[in-house]
Amino acid sequence: MAKLFFLCKDFKYFEDKTDEVRDPMGTLFPLWKFPPSFANRSVTALTWNPAYSDMLIIGYGLYDRTERIQGTIAVFTLNNNHPDTLIHTDSTVLSIDCLPSKPYLICVGLMDGDVIVYDISIPSGKAVFTNASYMCKHYGCVWQVRWCHLSTNHQPRFFSIGADGKVMRWTCIKGELRQVLLLDLPSATKATRLDDGTLLSLPGPAIALDFHRNRKDIFLVGTEDGKIYKASSNDPGIIDMIFDAHDFSVYSIQWSPFHPNIFASCSADGTVKIWHEKITECLMRFDLCTSLQDIAWSPYTSTMFAIAGADGKIYIFDIYSNKLEPICEQFLASESGKTCTKISFNPIHPILLVGDQTGWTICLKLSPNLRKKAKIRKGIEFAHNYEPEYDKLAQELSRTVAGDSMNDILIDQTNDIED
Image 1 (cartoon, rainbow, N blue to C red):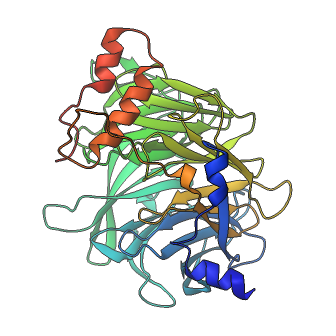
Image 2: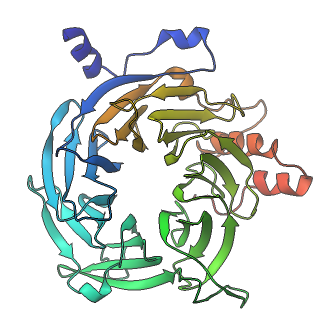
């Protein structure tokens, strides 16, 4: 026990030496486990605090729309399995995001359609911004929330996406949340106008949402019928591009942190797909034969991503090392037959959070083979430290695409990259 405590205290310096003889395969080494804050609840939201690399925020509840289930939010720090802050909500917590400029503020999306902003610096939590109007809320689950850039008056704003097919922008003003409708994915009886003037019927509901890291107005929406839509908050109601992505629900979408045009998606159909925002056909596809709940790009190496499976496993791919199979496949659910529901990479330390259906969250360290940096090619100089990783991902994806024009699109370094 003392040995394990010492190892957890010094996790930064512990390395798995067996990686040297099994390259490129890697492993996930368990460090800490965080217990459920409430009995019979699943981990339904999971994120790191962007200002404090040792702080994690977990949301709990049940994916059961037939009855109203109370949810909770727990704020933990590493090495302490007792929450520093515990907040009770009237409904299941489905999404959480921290405001980078004010890391004590979190926006929360609930299953009953509410969105709330809490101050987690208070041990019991405090709702500092709420939606006063019942008519303005989502009519269904709020699957994702994301903070965006401040308003012209420097007021915090965030986006939400609901099962009603609506994408809304909320502004925090004097203790209240005021909303603007950005996009409505209506039923087949209605129509949405594309940017070329075409009328198109779009089924909902919307499930997944992610905003571009550099072009703050660009976002992706994944729906229950397997489609992905690209749109801009600067052009409300207009859809820029449609991807016929999956056969079943798109559970998670995420832009690459290294390449400004690449994103990944995972679905209930058991597939992971890598996309370029200007190409409607996927660049790469991986079949895992189980429903896939969440996906996360590695912040350490551009060609690596992790997926949470309904079979209780975590799959980690590195398309630089192996384009066919995962380089790590590990059963991590706390009980047999249970689902891994959420995953999140720490932005600083080489550790991964995994939440499961039983409410447990486990923190794991990535072995050296799971965080390899790009090797700089001879004669190549880069102005920024992210460019070797950009180059690495672009080169690997270009090998999977036929045609010189496609390769030029992948390798071309556009002005989308933030200076």
